[in-house]
Length: 360
Ligand SMILES: [Zn+2]
Image (tube, rainbow, N blue to C red; front, side, top):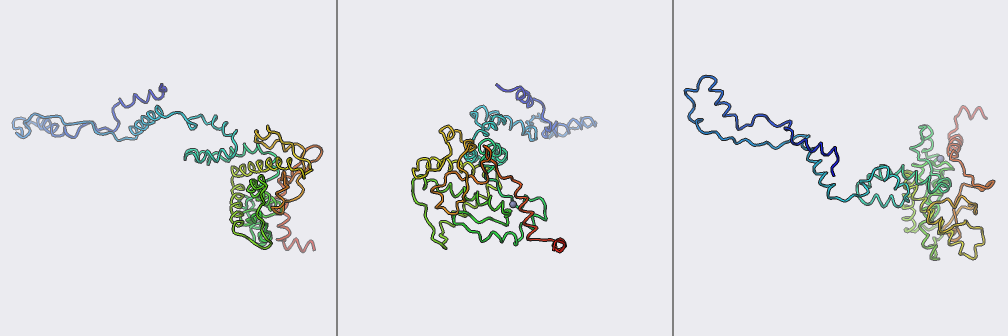
């Protein structure tokens, strides 16, 4: 059943076309003949014109914006009449509400369906991802804050200092086999952001080895001083993922989703591990189905040690740094530590001469 608006538009073609010429070109000779009569030459008409005149005029093809719009509307109408309804036909609010209930991996899958979906996720993905993080991963997001991108430091003087080789060269030699080196030319390398980078790098690597850990297979060991190609490739891939996670909330949400999966798999492993007598997080089947980190808000073993090596993965249960259990609840390190560290670093590496002498 067409809508009222469509019906109105359907009447429009019957109206005379706006740009159609009023006088057909073929009528020109006839017009000339009549004009001659008015000038008094009807006694001596041209014999060539003394034949029965036949009207050869026909409607000219219409070329105007208006007709093009009408044709497009007609084509659309035909399409919608034959094409079944799909997700794109849904009102925006309903589609939005559905996507907010999805997991980050669903949004990635959706963006591979068609160009329309990809464009939609490109446009709306960040906003949806932030809502998903708030709803599903509040604990993980508080434990794993993202390092600050240099381009996001508003104060140009501070940004220039933090990108200075004096600052970035401090972290170049800090190499782990399982964590990519921080990209100091892109990301703030203050102590807080350095630890945030390493934590995200660890999540991505820990997720990579979950199948090995579930199957009880040994993770390949790397001899001291060696840098095998497979590990370079893996670290490079992990670095790209971390950088995407820092730049894009949807990738950040995906990293947190993967870490929730790593954590639940690790808890299940450690609960079955008879040699592990430590306290465990309580994880039910319902928690698993919900796909949220809410069960991590209950009391559980705090993360005290940093996994400096992949060997730590075998016993690692829930890597949740930057929080402490105090007075019956978890307290998280504040995000403002980055500003404090940046100020301290600039003061120590770029002292202002006048102030230094005054202090001396
Ligand atoms: Zn920082």
